[in-house]
Image 1 (cartoon, rainbow, N blue to C red):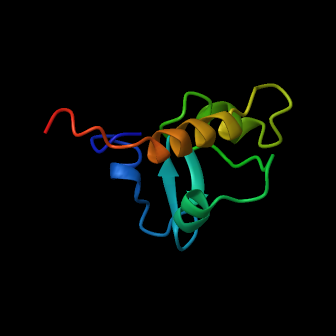
Image 2: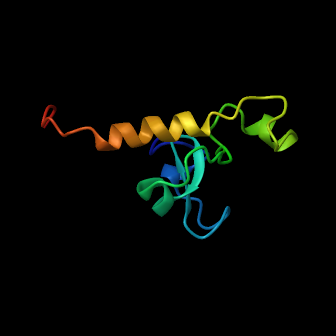
Length: 89
């Protein structure tokens, strides 16, 4: 999920999951849709760094595990909208 993630290589997959699909907070999503927002309630597949990646491979419909992509994208979008306080610079 971070720049040093051995699975996601900083979020970029070189087109393995689609043209503009990247890892955003453990979620596979088109980067433009991640920034612009999509339909509310849309569930996206999890990325290789997500703790439920192996479960998703066995059960892509998430009948036996919880897909938290909506919550993860919401947290990422909230953090992206947070005002820059200038701290740490």
